Length: 250
Image (tube, rainbow, N blue to C red; front, side):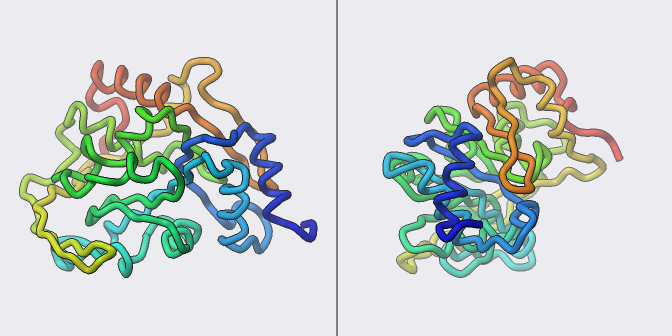
């Protein structure tokens, strides 16, 4: 890359359709870029493309390590289990993480509070206060960087509008949540189940209206930039018609 790699990355993101002032939720596979690309360079490129008026967000899920056997979540210490970019991003100065044991998100930029504050009120993974339910209301977009719709966390928020039978465990877990100031609260949260089912969120792509998705290339990575509200509307219409539309039985 050039001597200023995050500038080049920013220009490529703008070519893909990322605009200054966007509220952007990023799902990413860092290795898909095709070379040893440091996570901080990718984050810097994303922030430069969004500009000071833009908000960058990423899922920082922790369901692999925070569960009934280990019901402790700390916004500062608990690692993200959804990729090295997500984990590096949550550690950066100025980045804020929502307070939720299994399905937190992190963000930086003007819309951070609107996205994240209040997530601790949800007693399910992606309820009405979650960043994934709020993103469409803010006119947000979703960037899939080297990955596809199968990792689209917003789909869980859509599922919670219908509560299909596969979605949640019957009994909640009492989690202890520690925020960035060291304050603790206890929250009873019903975790995901999916017992006997396989997620098929890839089916959403075919439902999107024209203009809701833009495909492109970022270095070696295939990318998709998706309008969150259009994706929400299409997914919700499908799952209301058929609660099992986005799963297959094992």
